[in-house]
Length: 355
Image 1: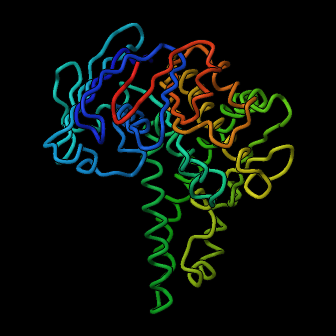
Image 2: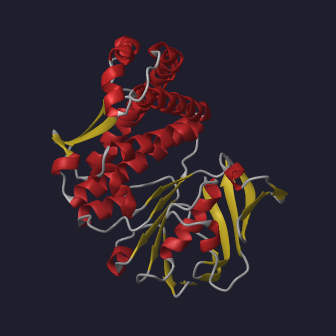
Image 3: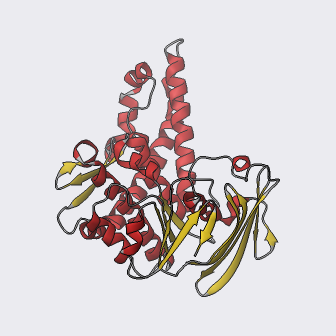
């Protein structure tokens, strides 16, 4: 997957630019608030997803403009494709001049992974962020997994509702049987997919993190399940009263976690800020390798403000040891550019590219 060109008009502070990246490493540099992250964000929209910054479509047009227009030409499996996004009050999307009924239909044509400073929450925050990462990663590759999640979440919500109601009035707990059967069935499928993904990503993550740390640190990833698969159904029955009092379903994939250990120590508790950033980054890079192994192509890697809080050796690894796929890196530090051995450096100032 390679971006050949990107034209942007009236997107945030990017009034009118044409971007022609290298097929490998591209360092997009400049001072803060010049438009570096805006360029990365524009690329990300072509995955069919919403802004990774949480912005609404109506908020990302240049102030005072009626619309923003993004035009991407990319190569996939040797074939060039042209995608266009027009943002007015909402997004309109086109591929090879054909109008799509929804911008989400761009998904599956152009693949990218994105790292931003907010991804530190993968390590620093609670289990919900780590479950979200693995669910999105699996869902990109196996759409039916998303349906399993929806069915499972619906069944858990229904079970919780009945349990809460039972505290106020007499409820026949047998009403829970159908929902618990669904929880058990879909829950086991979800856990199986997650364990398989952990199996796929582990050797890749181990290798990348070892290289990034100069072989000084070893990372381990573990899936922590809250339910015993063999006795899950019986557990749900036995825990009805205690779950009613707590107002939750206390076990299942919605309560599971993914644990990262650096040299045997829990990264969430003991890692430095730089180590946390390294783990989150390596997770994203590993996700890209899994996509490549399954689809046959690397996605485009979008690494926003990735160099902050990384020591020089880790910065060197990112700049000069990621080969064979297209990477866009944003940074503020001019000295980073001087260490780039191969690729392209692009300076952005006041929303314009200065070659």
